[in-house]
Every structure is written in structure tokens, then in C-alpha cells.
Image (tube, rainbow, N blue to C red; front, side, top):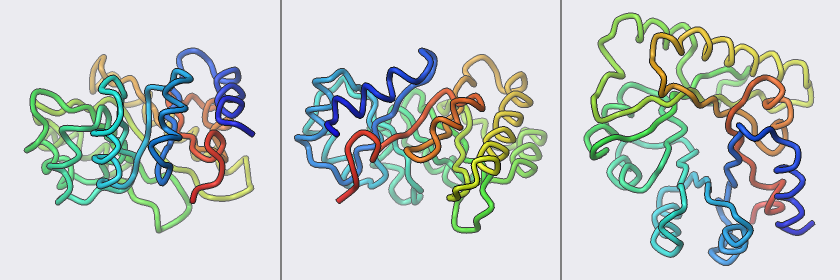
Length: 215
């Protein structure tokens, strides 16, 4: 399947309010240029060095999404490049990014929803407690745009749907507390984006279903 065919199959299936982020990690510049020529402007990278290299080489109107687990010592590199950082999984990372964010940096708080210990994120209860105290996540140069979560890697679709539904419930619960800019729910990847969209995702991160298997 070509990149054009992969893109079309997804774009034709998602509602207009859902943003497709093309996950281009490990893919060469030429492949990104092909997707760019087909109209894609949102690209996701999870390796900081690769993100920086591609951002220098490709057009300035690309919206770069930092989608992987981010170490605090890489905050200074990522903050000036990324349009949206998907995986803010701790107060310490949030604080580190705030030191390099310029006027305003859009981020998503990663919530741990999977039945797996190797995935990152705050638990829903911890995140609500942090918001209740009002002592964190309040830097004026940071903008929390929403939540991100990764479901369990399983063939059990009902479990995946249950996990996504829980994240959507949390999103709806705290949206009135955070404000109008809180409008993004990033959940769903190549294997489960259809379930995620059904459960209310507004942003999906898809790589192999567009570009084929990773190198």
C-alpha cells in the first residue's frame, strides 16, 4: 500500500474534527516530503535528535508533535521546536519545559490508562489531586491543551474501549476547570485508532498504517 493510499483510507474514515498526526519516526526525509506533498502538516516524532534534524530540513509550516517519553534534560531542545508535546507525564517535566517555552507552549498531560506498568503517565486520581491543590501545572508560559493516553497492547477491543472511555470521562470532568483552550484528547494509534475515535478522540497518532512497518 502506498503512502497516498494509507492516508486516504484514514482521512476518509475520521470525522473532520479529528486531527491526524502522521508518526514519521525512523522514516527518512524523502518519505516525509512525500506525505507533505499529499497535504500532511502534522508529523509526530519520539526521538529528540531525529525531531531536531527533520525540523531543520523540512518546511517551516509543519506542526511537529513530540509524542514519545521525554527526558527532562532534552526539554531545551524540544520546547522551541514542538507545536504540541504529547507526553508530559510528571510535574518535574512540566517545570523543565516551562523554563524553555518562550511565550506559550502547548502540552498534553499523559494519563496512565493501560493495564501495563511499562507505560508512563499520571494516574487519573493523582492528576485530579494536583489540579485541586492549584500548586502545579500553572506556569503562565505553558498551555495545557488536553490529555493523552495509550491503551493496553491487546486484541481485547472491549478492554481498549473501556480504557479510552475512562480517559474521555476524565477529560470531560476536568475541562470546565481548565478552560476553553483545553480541547485536545490524543488517543489512538495504528492498531486502535478506530476504537479511539468511537470513544471521543480528537487526535490520533498513526505511523505504520500510513508509512508501513518501521525500519
